[in-house]
Image (tube, rainbow, N blue to C red; front, side):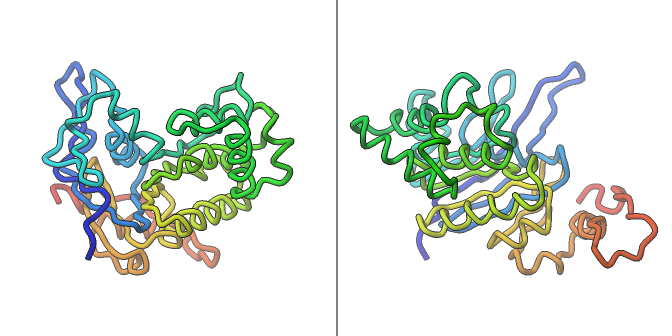
Length: 278
């Protein structure tokens, strides 16, 4: 078996408060190969902080510590900010939740995607133009020439998210971290965006970390799943075996998911005392 692309061991993220330091990520450990790993849990469970800490995007006064944070043989903990800029985007990319807050409102689509490519590769202007149009086509945007000239406010939510995916994937990274990539989209568009990510990840042999609170989506699109609660990983399983999970927290999340054939008068409330201390 080949060595994993990413190894995380004993990861912790801490923020100071008037009542003392608070750990929002606690002793998190996992590895990632060229596969699709889902991280699930309710809001505030530490999913996004885990993804951001991998790219060292947690700024002061936040503090990130780990026993080991290694990517493809590189000790990320020892990398300077300048060295991390060479890794971000080029080798590890991250798709944020909402394109309205992630895209620059005064730059065209072409300028923003080209910037992501130009930052890490030296190419002629015509080659960059061709790559941008090819990437827009790869994320299933019709008429790439027209869309390349648009500004973010001229895009629909689904199109904006596709542009974000194109921008993150055009440098051809080894790992893509997708943080709630479909949370701001209609259900009909969600499946299209996830199919695009899935197709590109499979074709390029990348590693994917898919962060979400939607158990059904993650179990459909990932190979493995880790479940987070209060900053800790409480369970890990194959995606196809999620419904057989045994931890009380995971069982509570599953039972709270509504179904089309629902007969219960009300959904259950999470009974946190059931897993307190676990």
